[in-house]
Amino acid sequence: MSTRFSDNDKITVAVITGGHDFDVPGFHEIFRAMPEVDSYIQHQDNFIEDVANVRDEYDVLLFYNMPRGEPDSRAQAAFENLGESGQGILLLHHAILAYLPWSLWSEMVGIPDRSFGFSMMQDIPIDVADSDHPITNGIASWQMVDETYSMASAGDDSRILLTTDHPDSMNVLGWTRQFRNSRVFCLQSGHDNITYVDPNFRKIIRRGIQWCAGRI
Image 1: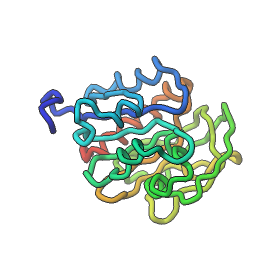
Image 2: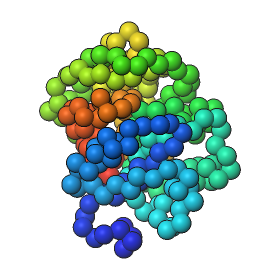
Image 3: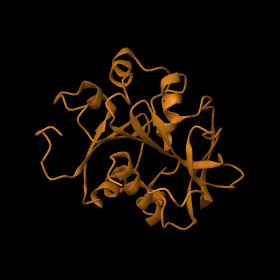
Image 4: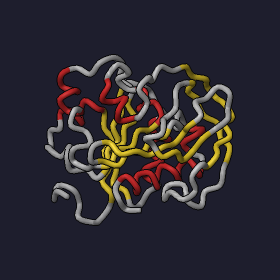
């Protein structure tokens, strides 16, 4: 890890936003409640520009962005090597819908056709499909309010962790996979502060960061 980051053995996470509005105080509070994490929340324009030249030195890249269409040349240059460095990658909620026409992002997510619909403020039963994984170990199935996406789910080349039988939702809500040299965790949940404050949601995000960083 670069000496630009404090040498305190914390997990350094670039939290990359842009292309979708969100509850700023509520979202920041998720990461302030993680004492083992140093989070650097930034618009993707700043991540792409990388003035401090640290883009490849974060332990985890957490995407909470949703730019539409194809990436422009600057974004493509910044993102086309994702996974090569071995940095962990966490794709949260609308980030699984970023750059819909771009095959690289679809490959990273593990869903070739990411066409989608959505339903707001749904009461969603969430089932733990794999209790042996470090992210979900010891967590019981639960219910929470969130936005759903109606779209295809991750397939056999992903490890399925969380599912739902909600009629207006994709079946798989949480999954891990390998993309190039990197661990990837995708979580469909996380629209706004109603979800941000849910204790199981926070636990899943925290463990997801730890797992992506190779700490659990």
